[in-house]
Length: 303
Ligand code: COA
Ligand code: ZN
Image (cartoon, rainbow, N blue to C red):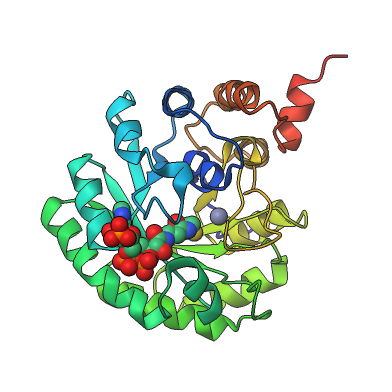
């Protein structure tokens, strides 16, 4: 099982406050979001995706992005990242003094059309001013490619299509690309196929994997990606999440479950697992719902 490529240290990108809360049915107060993010900051993540500067009509759940960014206590050593779809979102993000922005497109046309109301090519055009504004401001840029392993509307997605979009993002000048299994359909062999295709587009150290655990394959996919040398993974505390434009998508891979696997394998993350459980416990109280994380369930079970 040991592979020569296996990283000794992994960056875990906590996306719960964004990928998780964007999909919330109930209303979470701005104060609760701020408290949740502050607890996650205390856990020691080097990157924390806090909210989205998207259209409040598209995602009313995150309409308070400006207030959230103004209210959190920033930890030294944590980059606070936000989603930005266009120049308007970038203006709002810069005014909120974010450290990193993420632009987002996908590997299948129908999904991109539903999610951001344009084509893949159109999305790249919308990102052009975003990336140049980011460059000027010294803000790091991440690019998401959703539906990289399957699309809720189109079904199978060819690895070559993912690599094609990655090439466009690289040409735009993004610093990192996160490969999303938006609907949680990937299996480990597919991870090999997609990473294999992506090698032609960019270097491994610029790739992150973003798995959803809809069908229980997320950790197996992480292991496959680790063995290929991938060293950045997105996850959400408690397994929060889903996507409003991906019917049937359940939560992200839970951060607790990912950390348990990585730490057990002797891979460093710099993140305190108990502190993540505490943040999940807080949010579970706010939502009145138990987290989906398996590790959380085991750690909080009373005998
Ligand atoms: N921040 C705030 N408002 C924004 C905005 C932004 N980044 N981008 C657009 N808007 C507003 C416009 O001002 C306009 O408002 P008005 O109707 O009051 O004039 C309205 O939204 C429509 O703007 P338009 O440029 O025509 O956008 P659109 O309707 O084509 O929608 C997106 C495109 C990308 C802005 C929108 O679909 C979106 O924000 N999607 C995000 C989806 C998402 O976050 N999905 C989950 C992540 S995977
Ligand atoms: Zn996601």
